[in-house]
Image (tube, rainbow, N blue to C red; front, side, top):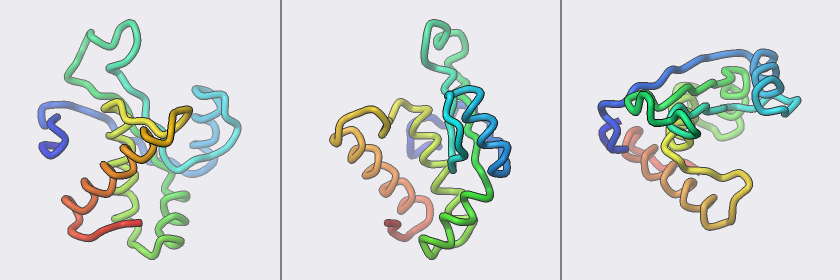
Length: 124
């Protein structure tokens, strides 16, 4: 994570199926549907300063990643890498939900830059 200026940071990854992702999304975010990735930051909120070395948790639905990879024409591994990048950016404070178009575009641009840096090809 040197490219993101957080080489000394820690995070956890959890790979689940769509059913488990729906449960997590419903329980923690009050959204009764599955999604491809959710990130839970440990650096935000009242106690975010307690352990600044831990960024947080990223949960990825392998079922959704498989569908997204097929739809995008890329390998499952590359799609999972993209979802990890997406989750890490959320942990670093980037957002695309409940925000303006500028913030969405900023995150999307950063995702593409990092994916290209890591994988060596551009992604749509």
